[in-house]
Image (cartoon, rainbow, N blue to C red):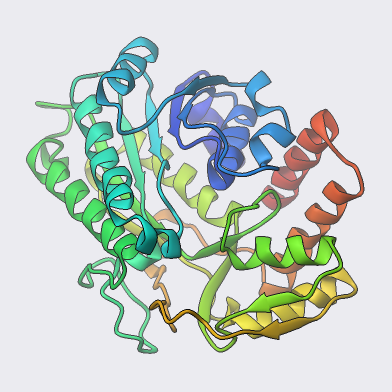
Length: 360
């Protein structure tokens, strides 16, 4: 797999929107290791600390400070660098923040996606564009059934709804302007959307996210506070969906008419556990700590959500790698290294080693 990805991405230009975020930093690093020329377009990192600055990623890629909603600036960047691949990851990604500022959430997640799609319509060099949305884009019925790519889109809260909207926009542009059936005739671009589960891994300090909340509390010898201990989530290691995105991008580049579509990259059923179970495992791997529950403010959040990734397994040859135990262990080990003082180039090499261990 790694040789296949290296053969496809080496010496290619990959533009990542949202590259200063958690997943954006990891995929930028991975693409750099594959020999790609990475161009990042993003606002400044959303948290302090953050993975992007902690590993000095700016020294190894082309970093451009920009808002995905700035259509003029974004177009100029894409015209200048002529990317072969575009991975659109810039987003307002916090559910509870979407209640506080729904307009900003829709502006970023919907109009930002349109800005990307409009820009690549004007740049013929782009061969593969992947729009990253969320497992929350589905109309969640709170049932045990795992959602497939053909299931209805929706979303209860503004964040989830905005991701469903981004999926609809992507599908409309794919049918209207980047029809897979005429790739190589009137255009050369393959366009897909991807949906992952609840991603965890080293380097995430996002607000109102369970794993970062746990790490912040544990590193300060504080009690972990959780509001929905019985909620069930599809937890997965950060490199698993990113491997799926990279593999899909390579397939789209080589055979766009076959792989331009919507794709799920969810974990095994054994990784679908409650918030309380995950927190207990985090404390066990950390070696100490405790948690307590508190009353929620009543804002709606999904209680159960599962993804069916059988399409990605069958057509891409992708599959989840780590058990929930391995997922949490590798994540906590990363944070332990960070809080023990591993920084800069040493942390960069640690992340590279993590990718290589994952591949092997």
